[in-house]
Length: 187
Length: 98
Image (cartoon, rainbow over all chains, first blue to last red):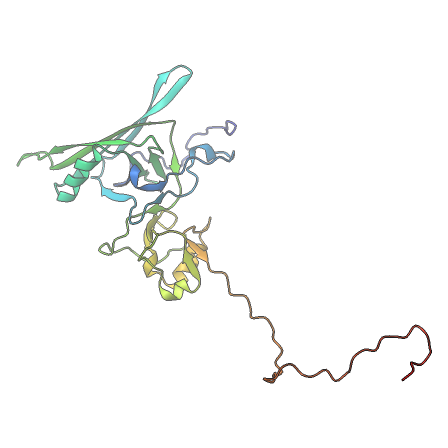
């Protein structure tokens, strides 16, 4: 573990709350390798995933659109003194009742997932780790003609030791019917 | 494991895939890339990203062919040795009787 370092205030730096609308979801059974945190001792390494996860042939993280201002991620302490961990709380709303989301909801409820969410400043946070995947459960609401909204509210629950930063590449399922954007932007 | 996902021919001449996955979102670029549709310039820029790009590996350049003697050889074999055999030195200066 790295030594403790100072924890300064924002000093004018952005600290926008919330998450971006896109959520990446990977099913634990479809990974070849789920990387753990870095083992080096530089500041921040113990909470940064060591590289990129890899998937079985044709598999990858799927991308889920979430309605703006519905995506939320919490980590709360659990356990007892000298034996503490963190409980993951994830919630987001996916609008619509497509067959694709219906199939996702049906399968994911008895599965285990690794989820990546993106902060407004472009950092990816990982929820779930190898052997400790997230359980994602969906609730469907049709809304009424005069109020509400139609779609699925998904809630994720799991346990991990703390915030995890993902800085690797996000493998997507191979599929010729999906048009990927090519072109490279020099960062 | 066999895969039908391949790099474009011009890219495959210089790089090889280290994964069977060819579609990924690259946070350092802020966009998705499809490795089956890359141009050579795009592949070079991916590899030049800070931290590298682990899914493409530079194909080592072939070793130059070993230098060979350009002189032609006959079908009967190598050129004859015209120097003759080396004679052993006698231990004494006496001439050998015929």
